[in-house]
Amino acid sequence: MKVKIALFFSILFISMIITPTIITLVDESQDISIFLNLTEEEEEKHSKETYKELKVYHNTDLNIFFRKIQKKKNVVFFSKNYVSEYLKITTPPPEFVL
Image (cartoon, rainbow, N blue to C red; front, side, top):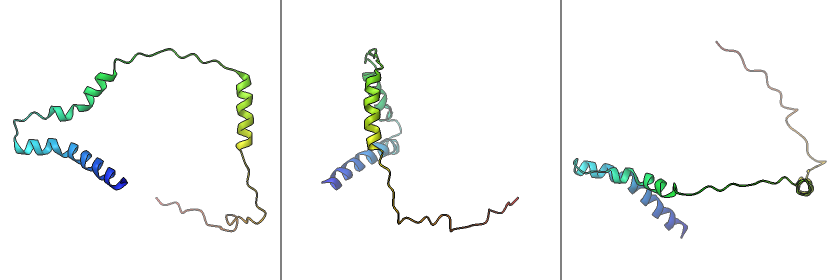
């Protein structure tokens, strides 16, 4: 099912890219601005949205509550058997080339 959906959207995307080129090759007098300006029409429809003011209240009680939760989620992992190989690897500095 996922393959079919992916194939459908791939074909749709490729056809949207290729359609203006094919129309131009078939007939040079055709107007392809409809295909090129599809997104502008969508932007014009959504431009009538109204913006509302959002008020933010700072509450210190909530901040303390969230800090307690955050401290509980920070889990530190310690292992006595872990040996770092980083200290054993030594490499010379890179050569300066002009």
